[in-house]
Image (cartoon, rainbow, N blue to C red; front, side, top):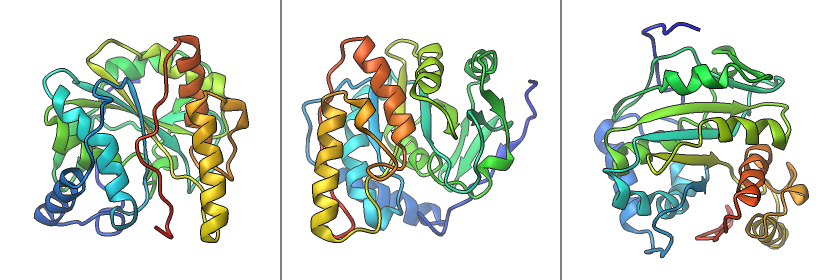
Length: 248
């Protein structure tokens, strides 16, 4: 796959987050400033939500805020999340050389993507990214806390935890690489049901029980399961920082 020189325009600016640069910068700054301090300063993998910022921005702020302490270290972010709009098999990325948000453009790490494209079930498809928000909404937060970095965008379709784990393992890197998993938890439930299910999902994630995850508990369950598979293999630990639902 050759580089195209193209930039992916933002698809959900003005919907999931403000389209005006000043407004976007302000809401991201507020979400980060309002986040509680966390002792987990050097996480290799974070899981952050992808709903509209007015709903999940504060939780996202909690996940992304600690990264500012590694602003000079983290130079590559692998963003992996679920496809909401187009069904497809395997894992996909875009043909773009950069992704734009109202805060500017972020280059795509094509050296990493060329490695991923040697794996089975990994392909380029701009079509499956049309109108897709799960990866895009992480980018403005990353722009705010990291400044200068590149991204490896991975959209997960019908793929196994093993497929996702192989892809993440191939671009694992060192301290310069962060993995940002995009997922909300339960959807469209009453408050108590949501809280009960989300607590169960959170416990499964913290205990690395990837087999217990499904689409009812987390829309990004395939991405999370792949990350947890690697975490289990590498003897890593998971710490929950914040979880809320739409009732909150």
